[in-house]
Structures are given as structure tokens and as C-alpha cells.
Length: 312
Image (cartoon, rainbow, N blue to C red; front, side, top):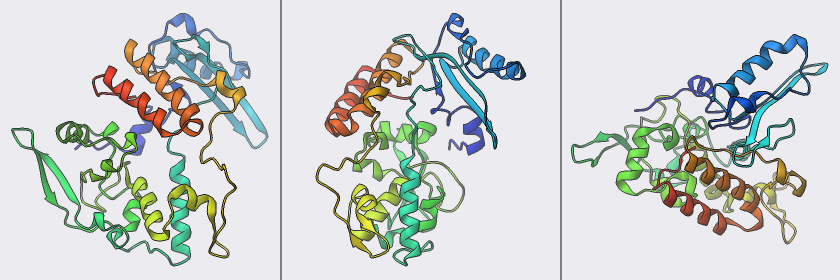
């Protein structure tokens, strides 16, 4: 099993997607002088500039503040390696997993109003969780070795990422399972991704994964609305549905004036950098304006170019 803790993930830069664009970059690109720098922070400047010079990152933005206000801000390297756009203090980043906070809040509101309970079996609301399977490994012929979980998945397990579900991006085991079985990754936004097995017993330990995606399903099943509608339509004071105006958009695409400031998120190969830059930027812009059809098209194109190994 590939167990990566939150601390390890932070140390390795896995959670720095909001401030780092990964790729090889020439040391010549690292010479930018940050706008808010001062003599007191030369060590910070040197560390960040060094990360770009050593090709650890393509670009980085950092800020620091005290109760009195901002005391440091710096931008180094490139926001987009393909176009050569420089990293700036107002570069727009794709900040992942922000809907998890809203989803968890919706679930906790239902718990406050006695619609759900932390120690309920999740299968009470989602029958598909009634018989979870734990992936123990693979047979010599590559066939996954499965066994029934010894414990039930509780609502609290899903809310605290202790359910046993993982993400393939940090799990070689689940990545192999997807390849062997043809199960789509959760990043495809397909319901078939929810057929993923557990990698450990519910409640055994913490690991970041699709637990919060299941919480979204839990909220929908409990209230009878899809998650975006539930978040925008429900008045918890009256427990009545508030119909949104016609044309309501669920999402937060960059404004028109932000389009030229979007940072790319390249992988560490020439092909990957080109594809992932296009995929990320297109999803951000097309997510609301053109819907999921364009997103699916971009993902399929990118996966075909990378032979099914689209990874960031």
C-alpha cells in the first residue's frame, strides 16, 4: 500500500498546486526581482529563486503577512513555460479540492438538523456502500485480490478521510487496479469511478481520497437534490427549496480580465507540459461556459496522447 501522510505530501510539494507550476525551466528565467522584497527577506528570495534555478519548479509566488499587513511578497520564474509568461503577484492559479469544504459543510448542516448522524452506516443512505471490498494485492496473473471489509463505513469515516478510499494519483496500487480493470479514475467525473475498492479497513488510518466525493453522494441521497442545486437552493432556516434564477451558473470561472494571468500546470515532459497546460486552462474556462462535453473531449485527447497516463 502506498501510504502518504499529509505532512509527507506537504513536504513533497503535493499540496502546492496553488503556488507552484512544475516543469524544467532555464536558470535564466529565475532572475526576476519580487515587487515586495526587501533586504530583510533576501534569504527567502534566494530560496525561492534557487528552486527555479535548480529546475525544482517553473515558477513560484509567495506572500507573508502579520496582523499589521503584508510584509513580504515575491514572484519568480514562469507562470506558463509554453508561452514564456512571467510569474507575477496576481497570477491566477487553479486551486484544487475547494468544493470539499462546501460539501463537508453541507453534510454537517444535515447532521445539525438531525437528517444524518456521524455514526450511521453510510450504507443507510447509500446502499452501494453496504459491502465494501478491500484490495489486498494482485495475483501472479495480475488479477486483483479482494476481500470483504471487516467494518462498515460510517459517515464520520467519509468526512475524515478514514474510510479506506484513496486517490490513484498518490497510490500505485489503485493506479494498477484502474489499469487492470479499466475502472475510470475519479478525475474523469464518471460514476463508475465509485466502484473503487478500499485500500485499508474503515477507521484504520487517514488517507486522502474519494471519501469527500462520497459525502457529496450522501448529501444528494439524503435530500433528493443534486449537490450544486442543494448548495444553492436550500434554505436551512425554513427547510424549503429556494429556486435559483434561470441561467444560474454553478462554478467560478476566471473573469475575462484574468484569462491572460492563468498559470499553467505542466508535467515534466515536453508532451506532458503542452497537453496539461491546455487541459488545465481549458477546463477552467470551459467548465461553465461550455459544460462537461468539452472537458471530456480535452481529457480524452490528452489521455490518447499520453497513452492513458495523464498525471500531474
